Length: 309
Ligand SMILES: [Zn+2]
Image 1 (cartoon, rainbow, N blue to C red):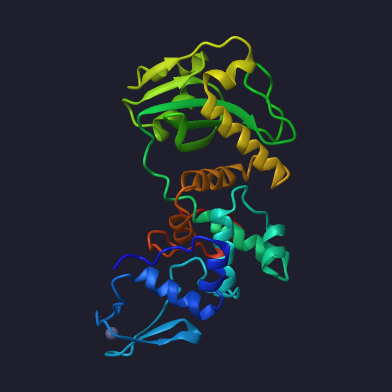
Image 2 (image 1 turned 180 degrees about the vertical axis):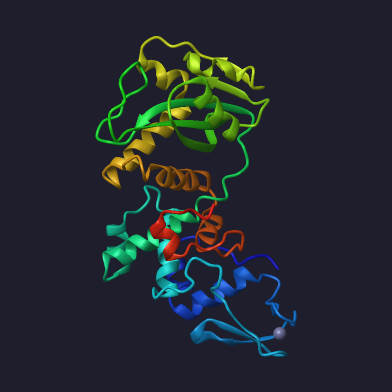
């Protein structure tokens, strides 16, 4: 049995996920597409104690929680509100702020909405493991704070971080993207990012910066494009330039700027949504932890600033 599909519109979403009970059913079908098995005795029949989201084995009476291991386990927020939050985060293109989430879902406390958003963001960390392949554009830029500038010998201002982006060239469009924060524009920093993000043997297009020169030695088919003025960046590396432009707009518009410390999490969110822009169902299920590949983030970890990835 395949996992259940995903609603195609907001009104479909509303009718599928109108009640906690309907959400719970969907959750169970997503987590156990081949049918629930008792974790203790392996028996395949269970009673559903739906109100408590508990599955009780018909043979040995062992009880297990349907939400254990998912993002919504052990929270006081209703399963329905989690479904709506994950849907908004997965599909709403510019992303969503804690204030917007609080308003949209009618959540009383801002802190609750903030914590939900943080948990959903943590679920975005792990799936990005495969490296990019084929033809890839790579560039770097300062991001964060109130103003951004390109490298260009300018000094780094406080609060800004140097971000490197890699994006696959797919015809006239873009494939997957990877983003990372690096310390500086040295060959070590830039090369280290590329090695983590792009499969060796790929064709890598960059500008003429010397920090990219060692890429050839590291096994890449490096093709630097020399540029004149900084304004030409949009022409020689159009896709990666568009990524930076969208990223900066999103950070400023939705979040009113993001400090260095929290930037990596926002980069994860941007990459997660960008790479799943054509598969919102997969994004939604991953966020809620319904795919079973991601351990849940506890509130304790959240406040210590740890990641489960
Ligand atoms: Zn059992």
